[in-house]
Every structure is written in C-alpha cells, then in structure tokens.
Amino acid sequence: MLPVFKELDHCTICPRNCGVNRNAGHLGYCGSNAGYNIGSICIHQGEEPPISGSKGICNIFFARCNLQCLFCQNYQISRRRGIIESTSYTLEAITRTVINVLDQGIDSVGFVTPTHFTPHVRAIILRLNHLGYKPITVYNSNGFDNAEILRNFEGLIDVYLPDFKYFDPLLAEKYSDVRDYPEVAKKAIGEMYRQKGSTMVMNDNGLAVTGLIIRHLVLPGQVKDSIEIWKWIAAELSASISISLMSQYYPTVHVSGHPHLGRKLTTEEYQEVLEAMENLGFTKGWIQHPESAISYLPDFNMDHPFEG
Image (cartoon, rainbow, N blue to C red; front, side):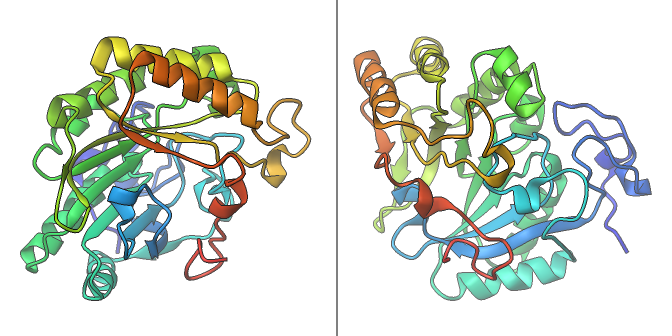
C-alpha cells in the first residue's frame, strides 16, 4: 500500500510542474510514484567536514531525479526510466533504519535528491521527532527546487546544501534537460539564504547545526560558466556564504565518448575558478584536491555505496 500525500494528486512539488496524480500511480518527468522509493540509506563520510563530522552522516538517497544530468555519478539510482537500484520502503521501515544508525552515535540525517519527495522528507522528520529523535537535518539538493516548497521547510531543515550547477540556460538544457535551471536555482537558493543567512553555527563536535553551504561542481570546459555563478552569488547574496568548490568530476560510462564531458577536469581549470572566487571575496568553505575524482565514485549495488 502506497502512502497518500494530498499534494501528489496534482504534483507540482518540483519546478517541472508536471501536474500528474502520483497517488494514482501516474508518473511525471521524474518517473516516481507516491512511494518512499530510496536508493540507499547509509552512513556517508564524504560530505563537507561540518556535514559529515568525524563519524559521518546518515544519508537517505532518494531514487529517480527531477534533473537528468548526462554526467550524473549516481546514475544507478537517478535515472527517471528503466531499472535502477531502488527499494520501496514504508515510513516505519525508514525510521527504524535511520534510528539504528543514529543509535551508533551519528547526529545528522541527510536527504539527498529530495526535491521530488518533499512530502516524504517532512513525514520522515516528523516521525523521527515523534519517536524522540531530533537529528540535525540536511537538505542536499540539485538546486532545482520550488522556493515556495522550501518556505514550508523553515524550522524543519537545519542545513541547506544545494548545488548551483549552471548559469547559462543553454548549458543547463544541453547537459540536464532543463533550460530554466538558472532562474529556478537563483530563487531557491535565495530562499535558503533568507532562512539561514551567511553565518553557519557549529556545535562542540564541529557539526553545522544551522546554515547554508552552496556547492558547485566545475565541469570540463566550463570555467566561464562557473565564474558567472560566483559573481552572481557575491553580488546578489553574499561573499560571506560558505561554499564548496568541487573538482571531483569524473566521466562515467555514459559520457565516455562525449566531446566535452568525456575527460576529467584539469588542474588549470579548477585553479582558474578558485582564483576568481578568491578575487570576489569568498573566504569561507572547502575545496578539493584536483586529483580527488576517483575517491567519490559510488556503487549503489553495495550496502555502503561509498566504501568501494
């Protein structure tokens, strides 16, 4: 028996605004029904230091996706059509699994690719709270979020961890099948910033308990687009926001022959973006070693996808 969320009768919870009745089993762009469809629930130690801490975070990886990035490293669970690595859970099974992890001394729960499952995210948080568990909650999204939905998460989500993938709509359309990504991401991240500001609050264990970290993955050949993103953030939000500049791009089998995406990022490309950010006044955040790409490749056939 699938759960019933009223907002899925005419689903517009993500900016695709498909309007399908997921409660009746109809599938919109993301290919998801109304169930708790999850690719993995696992301890992940590869997030930014104030997210993972020393013990890791309990990440809930939702299946399918409202973006379809050609280069997605989580393609085993993110494809919107066909067979993927996914399990349909009940709410009780999810909370039981999460509690087993929290009882090991983990303090945070991350919701990864949650945009098309926001009613489910709310239900999980409220159920955990009802059972006496109030972990730090992390909303880890691709940035293609509905700002109005995010307003409803104020007070429930402690830390926002969005991507800002593209500034150029044509690039967004070519690589992720979504031309309006830049404008949607600006509004979504603007709402996250309204809620959290640029100050991250940490606890005694070095974990972020409230705040915003904006992620950006530098793509090969797209230095200019990356720099435009940071220019906009500095001008329209604040250069005091915590950032995460990622160099971990790695060409999956799906783009191995692509003329632009079929190679790794060069050290020079990453360094050019980093220098531009420093010139714009960004001083808080995290960078990656240019040769770190292979360290972040998951295998969702495994119980612990990032330990391969």
